[in-house]
Image (cartoon, rainbow, N blue to C red):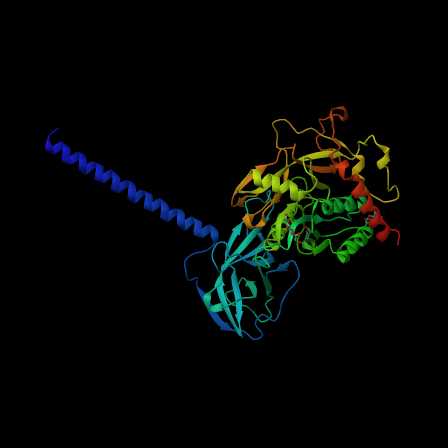
Length: 444
Ligand SMILES: *[C@@H]1O[C@H](CO)[C@@H](O)[C@H](O)[C@H]1NC(C)=O
Ligand SMILES: *[C@@H]1O[C@H](CO)[C@@H](O)[C@H](O)[C@H]1NC(C)=O
Ligand SMILES: *[C@@H]1O[C@H](CO)[C@@H](O)[C@H](O)[C@H]1NC(C)=O
């Protein structure tokens, strides 16, 4: 090789190296910018303005759903989400995707309102409805100091009497221990719900398995079920959240517009689920997300604590656990008449239904989740669109989602159902607890 070609080879190599380096730096910067956008953090000093506002923050609105004046947007709850940047405010909202505009967040410092621009980040799943769950994200200006409430408007300035929402912290209540190990989120109760027996059985199963609180997003229920809810609220297991979304929007009773048109998917369920996860972030070790006719039933263990410690020890770094949905048909009655109890209580007796549909072959089989809420950024009905850490599909040999309802897979004949009595190992405790509730609520 002569000297000339050797020199040009070196030149070429240096060129290729530099080119690659520059390319990588550009990719890195673009990625960083995208990430910052996604997190709603657009630079160190968001534009803001300060004006005087008499009685700033005095008009606190503690309703669960707060409309934003002059817009098609509703606020549910505001959280200081310090996982992303120390002063990022995340407001869980329901926003019309076609008509949203620039929103502004306002914080109070004495009689001054400090205002800043908001970003709107829509959640990926809305199943084709006009309104979608969204995060309204605001960087809290340092000038605002410690903030405890926020107002959102369409105009740059808050108007006198702008409603303010309390800001909730996501930090753990006391260092180390969690206030609760398991919290169940039930979204949503609606339409004159009156399946009293199954409702009581589900709640007592949650209690037996380890739930320390059940949050119920309630739109509507029958008067007899209201008595049951009042009992559980005063006794402490249940907290009812007044999910009055139907006062503001035409909610769909289905999961897609072609089955029941409306403004928003299935009673606003996705928004309620996200709110429930954030409400429990600093409080509960795990959050269990299922409907009232569903129970995560351990097969290998006797309670959720043993089951979760087994699952998390075997799968370090896993933050969400997906349980196989198994439909137990209401219509098919079990073979042991010793569970033929509570004939005078309206509703379904889950102990009597022990035949489940087999899983569909090569088809979507919906799952429900138990999650570590601190790892979740966004949640949906059957999946976690944005989370930290790994996911696990829990095998049916460890636990199953016991879903007692009408027939789901119409192709399956009754003779093809699988007999499964995993629930019966809890029957003694369940019967005792249900009797106790019924004697308190229905016999008094
Ligand atoms: C949660 O579970 C742990 C052990 O699994 C236990 O030590 C702790 O007391 C439980 N916390 C609550 C609030 O029940
Ligand atoms: C609600 O359900 C209860 C019990 O099934 C029934 O008696 C009542 O008439 C229903 N109310 C309405 C408004 O449909
Ligand atoms: C629901 O839809 C009806 C008819 O389309 C409309 O008149 C009504 O105002 C809507 N209600 C709400 C709360 O949006």
